[in-house]
Image (cartoon, rainbow, N blue to C red):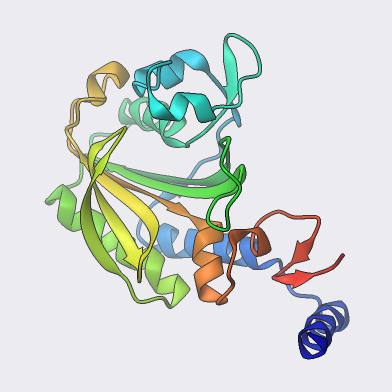
Length: 235
């Protein structure tokens, strides 16, 4: 225990003497640069969304995710995912071009989670989507997953899985840990968003990536926190 306390104190002192960017912010920046180099445009959308937009994602009272939503009032909630807003933005951008629409967002999402080392109630998601790819949508998806994972330096595998929202997803696994789920369209959700073309998209949990990159035992050490700073315990 004494050795661990000393190592933790050394980490804090090093950060004070040589201030780094927060690891989460640095990862966001690295991923953004990688995606922009692939032709993606970054967007920022509201953290509060309408309950109606959740319904378009089939998240209604009988859906498992519904119980995890933080509702503000009868019409608004904190977004549990980025997808509803990105559906809207990419559909509006479609009106301005005939070519592919490639966008991504990095931002906070909120879910009522059980207390564990793998989940946070406020967490950071990266979502990327290409509408109207000029090649096979799954091939495009695999390329973009590769670009994101290259910034982490982590080895990964791909696995087809069932999903409550997307029915079937292409999951990114680092060992036994899922760090991303991807999907392709046309999809049953598309009609509600007036989307009529093929697309490919993926969502990544950044705190979970950082946990694996820095060999930490819990995402609580890598996210927004009053107890930890870049994995070091400050209280």
